[in-house]
Amino acid sequence: MPDPLGPLFAALESINGELTSFAARLAKLEDSNSVRGSKPAGSGEDGGGDSARVRGAPVVWHKVEEDVREELWAEFTAWVIRMADVYELTTEQLPHACWWEHGAVVAELTALWTGWESAFGNEEDAAAGPYLWHDAWSRGIERIGRTWLGECTNGYHQTKSRTVWGTDPAYRKKIIEAGPPGAGNGGPAKPKAA
Image (cartoon, rainbow, N blue to C red; front, side):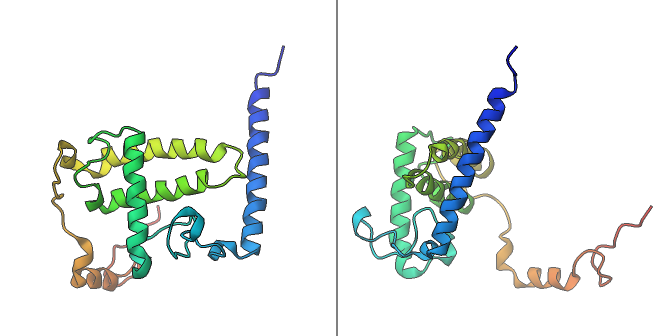
């Protein structure tokens, strides 16, 4: 009788081989300093501008330099619109009228975008990247519709009723002065040992 775990072990061995190959390619990139942008993302052949961002590199919007933010945002927006059409997203999945007004939605889509660039922009990938990206896309779109949008799925933007934490310096000061739990300075007491 054939070993029922044989196919599982074969798949794990294949994945391990791909991970080893990926680690070797990553080490080669790091050694050659390519991660910092020896070939700018927006130079020449891909139709972009003078950005030094490597395709697939993480994007943190508030840290993107002003001189490249507008171009990068236009590229990202074009990708979101293209993906919404390709994957036939509904307003319940991604509100057409206001997705860009939700910071968490933009962060999720940005992660999916950079993952897509990495998965589909690497000609050496053995097809695991695109497959894994599709899994992440499915989970990300579900999270967007379920977690962050609230009333916006009805076709109009509805600002969530909440307090913005980062606009009150007194609030931050109060927390810092309280100190970490159990610090003996007014913070929550340590639980007593039983």
